[in-house]
Image (cartoon, rainbow, N blue to C red; front, side, top):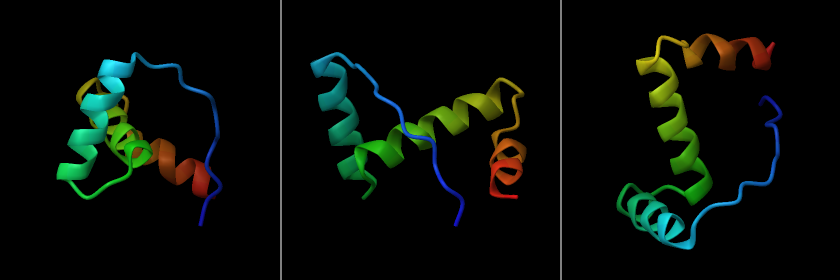
Length: 58
C-alpha cells in the first residue's frame, strides 16, 4: 500500500459537521470523504487524479 501524505487542515466547524454527516451517510471516515471529494473535483477539472495516485504508488 502506498504511503499517504499527512498534513493539517483547518476547517470551519460548521463545514466539518457537514463533512461528518456526509461521511457517515456513505460509511466513510471524514478523511476518506474529503479525499473522495477532492479526487472527484480533480477529475472534473481535468487533473486526472487516478494517474497522480498511480504515480505515488510506484
